[in-house]
Figure 1 (cartoon, helix red, strand yellow):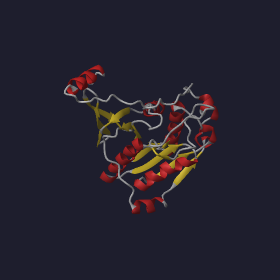
Figure 2: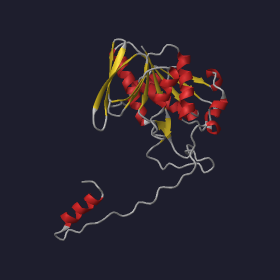
Figure 3: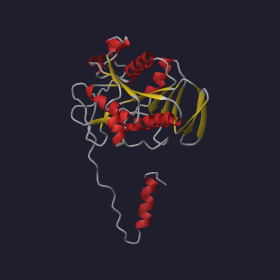
Length: 260
């Protein structure tokens, strides 16, 4: 089985993130980047499938030079090989362009049985690339999987919603996005870190994929951020002094906030 895991190199969510005033894109220069934490669950799920049988795991990412770190981390976890799509024309690409480039890369890889993604990226949090990717590839999409089971020529997932749990079956090949409830991603071991140095990583440009630069980039994006504003400073909360009536005041506050 050939498994492709799409991962993203994102700004550290724990850092103070800002926007570039010139074009309202996320400032990626002034903050450290890393493999999106939500994508680690997709990598881990691919590795579990690999360990349960015969499978090859390819990690695919699109981004600037630094995005190679996302591939590196995935290889250290246990993926077999990586592909990094790097081209200056990609800067500012939105979900539509991202799905186009990733789809062409998956096609270039040849026969693929399963494409895995995280439920969202930790920077954009749109949760739409998996669906767009499936549409471009002409494959079934099964999203927000909190459990995944392979059965012969198909798969079954469990999707946990706010009010119900669904069991969904799909044929293969398919595109599946997984949630952060599906597993616990492993830490790279020393052996994995050393082994990753010898694993193959290819770097592709838009020309390698046959994608016209006019289809990607900020100027050709379907969606744009028109304006940004800094988060307002945090205000002091309500302090309740318990003079014998504190419980009633607290209950009233919770009711006003519709917490109870």
